[in-house]
Length: 154
Image 1 (cartoon, rainbow, N blue to C red):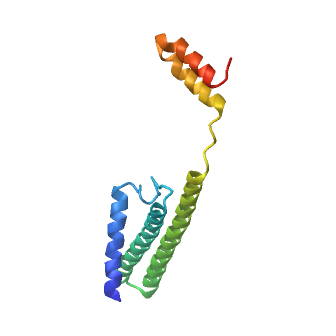
Image 2: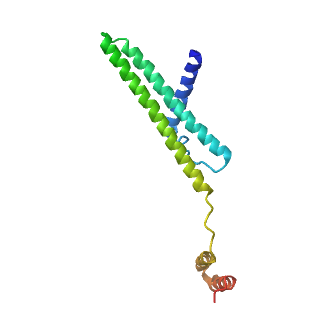
Image 3: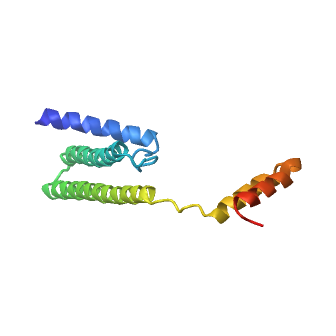
């Protein structure tokens, strides 16, 4: 059991280090497409980041416990351990909050990507064609006449 925890802790530290080096681009869901694979990968990244933060909190707690053993009196040792527990619990709660926020942000991004695009109106297409014709120079008059004919503009 202890061996698995240690390996998981190292995995968490490695993930935390890689997130720090990449600027957290994976954790924020940057570049998430609409595909199921991309969505699942982003969700796995969010969960992995939370686990990494929890593992870091556990490691920090272990270090604090070791420091607390050096306390001279029982009350100081108890206060030190209590402080370490509070900090660990706060870090775990913060990791959970960040996971929820990242999940909500991911859902919003996916919903926005799935929204149908506004259909292009004939007036907008004509305006784009007219703008293209304006750039042609000598062919401009012929292009404008052709565009007016295609879009029934007299």
